[in-house]
Image (tube, rainbow, N blue to C red; front, side, top):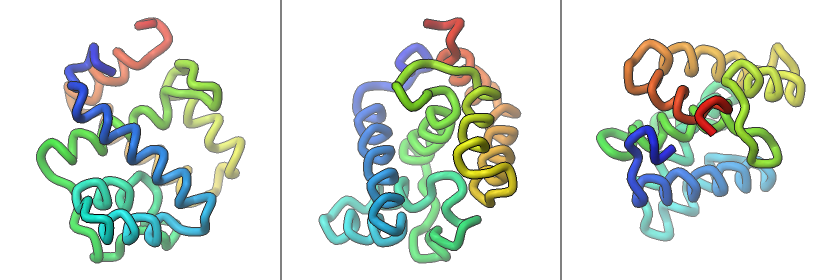
Length: 142
């Protein structure tokens, strides 16, 4: 994603948030994970973890407890959402369509997180920055 203008500090946040979010899913809740990150003194990272796409749709979102990230943290969250659909389980690059299809296959097409993911990627695809990030993360850019 560096080709898309995301510097090293933001990439560290994105990676940390991705791991923490996945750990939260495995441990039983993204909200609980975000609270633990907050207690450790990392408010901005907690916001990114809490707001990852689809968390609110499944009832595991922040529900007002964590304000939406802004500024650089918001850019990191946008990049994380794009990374979800442009990276496969092995870390390889896939198109957004392939990424969404894989999430839908794993969770079921009617899953609230899948529906939220489709909406979120459509929103990001409307902005020039989101389009550039998706192009940079696609297999053709490899």
